[in-house]
Amino acid sequence: MTRRQRPVLDALTEPLEFAFMQRAFLAAGLAAVVCAVVGTFVVLRGMAFMGDAVAHSSLAGMSVAYFFGGHVFWGALAWAVPASMLITFISQRANLRLDTSIGIIFSGGFALGIILMSQAGNYTADLFGLLFGNVLGVSWNEVALIGGIAGGVILVVLAFYKELLFTSYDATMSAASGIPVRFVQYLLPVLLGVTTVATLKVVGIVLVLALLVTPPATATLLARRLPGIMGFSIVISLLSTVAGLYLSYYADLPSGPSIVMVATGLFLLALFFAPAKGLVWRWRKPSLIPTQETAG
Amino acid sequence: MQQVKPDSPGDPVDGGAKTDAPADPGPLTYPALELQGVWAGYNHQPVLEDVSFQVAQGEILGIIGPNGSGKSTLMKAVLGLVKPWQGRILVLGQPGAAERSRVGYMPQVEQVDWDFPVTVGDVALMGRYARRGLLRRANRLDHEEADAALERVGIYELRKNLIGDLSGGQRRRVLLARALVNHPELLLLDEPTAGMDATAQHQLLDIIDALRQEGTTVVLSTHDLSCVPEWCEKAACLNRRLVAFGTPSEVLNERVLSETFGTHLLLVHTDGQAYAYQHHTHDSDGPDQESDQAPAARA
Image 1 (cartoon, rainbow over the protein chains, first blue to last red):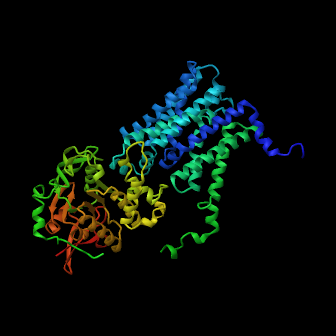
Image 2 (spheres, rainbow over the protein chains, first blue to last red):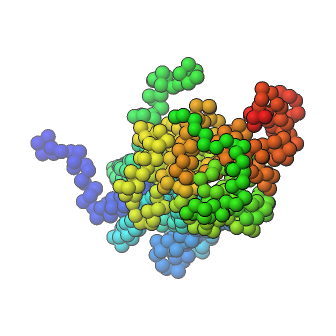
């Protein structure tokens, strides 16, 4: 006992001795913060599947870049931004429901990506990396890109916070009062597309949705107002990625799914035990549920 | 508050004022709202057909009409949210949506997402956002104006509550506070009395009375025929086209109302009051299906 006085601390610092783990923690942490901020609006506006569609269809852009020997990151970015705007444009102009235009872009881009990947060399292994992410293989260059995206997106959200808030809450009223609603209606999908790209390397195409949706959903169970929800969302998202990476390191599990499992676990905890909204308290205190007498 | 009624609906001076409102000798010579042959609609389907009228400054106009008669569309056209196909809309003497910060709008309570995680104070403050412009935060004055608007509608003490925790009447007041936060010269209220009990209606009437005394022009839409003679100096009967426009006593008669609400409306005179019975078009014709009973006008 005298030799190893702080086994917990040792367990926490041991992975950090490896440069690849340092990069993984940084990349995942940065992606977690930006996902939490943008994801809060995504959850409140019901745009979850737009984020998922942008991520999946980005495979097309990544494949083109991969095919021609470029970096998949720029391919995804070049695809995600126009794809998110196209979804918005189609739903507004073609009189299609939003989920329909999401479905078209989602499957069309994904199919194109698979076809392109199948024509390239190391089909299965590389496709697997894109679909499920490989945060342990992230380079310093990519960490810097993710950091740049995270910083840029958060600055834009802060700059247009009141417009994003008002338009998300009541688009008609904000238009009536003179807020440039059309601008905001395209701004959020673009932010979403860029955020998705920053997250691709961390959890992969298939699981981006989890980081966008699960921490903000957990936060809505814990906080009342939008700023509080965003703050909780950031904390929960960071906690999920850090704990997920440790889980991945010690249990030798794939990193992306580990992060998602921790986030899901935290959501379930909040669902049952959140101070005001937890299901357990509702079951235990039936008097809080309005009976016919109190409601009538 | 006492029920002050500065002018009775049948006042002949009032009736004369509507036709020559632009010649009003006051310092402001334009009408608060003027529609000139406005056509508007959605997807090639007209909802407003050749609607023209004027509302003088400080007047209260009640717009009556059945569901789908274009009441909300008319308000959205005034706000610049719906572009007229033809015709002109002059708001406070200016074309189109140029005067947005001088116009307040209270939407129907059903059109708002009441689960959104914002407080009463947040919603009132949103009314000031457009005025602040991009890249700027709400300042101290904005917060003071939001508080004052909440005070005015009597829900200042609820400012830290989430909007989802409010009762129906309180929800309407939040929306009214947001509409009042910029001290609008023209106030548009879409169905302000729908589902309100008598007490809540009187509280709203008090607020509108006070606004009228400050010179605010109010345009409200309603299903409730009884509040029109009580609240409004002018009434407009709308069913896509303007069926009638004038003082409530000129407009609220059986012929006009039947034309506005279609053949399903009938008036019954009892106890010195006229009651309008409106059939919903999808209802059967059985007498127990009659609904929307409302005292229409004192006979």
